[in-house]
Length: 174
Image 1 (tube, rainbow, N blue to C red):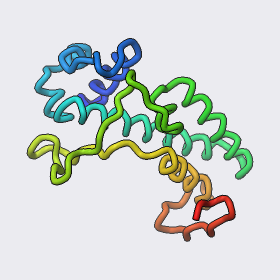
Image 2 (image 1 turned 90 degrees about the vertical axis):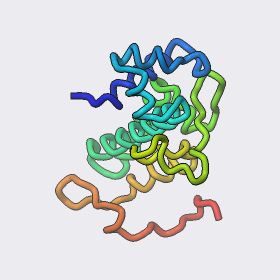
Image 3 (image 1 turned 180 degrees about the vertical axis):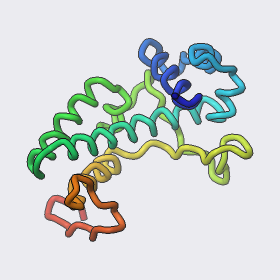
């Protein structure tokens, strides 16, 4: 069963499909999700918190798709081809993923600022504030790390703490 957070993110993403971010109203997102405005504010702290969560959700969804693409492929070359195909599909279907990967944001999209320094919680007693969006380089680095993780032999990839940092290649920036 989806959580209130999931329903609110879906409602905000639906609103974003037809309206520029500046025209998306919190009251309308809450109404579409079937919750009170207070629930929305309790969950995200405000429109900036909702924007950060939307962008983080898009980044996490993209990286989850990378994991699935790598897991469904036979070998390394097939995995990289599957990741490339997934990336093209994700960019075509999700404007937030496109903005995250290209760094091209416009007025129709939420471009959240990172939370204010010293403000660990959007609302006292609530979860940690979502950080600002990853840069395109950071998102691609995370996807690349997943691609080079060795397999455990049972179809799963090892966690980062169990594998050495890959050697710097001539493609890496200094």
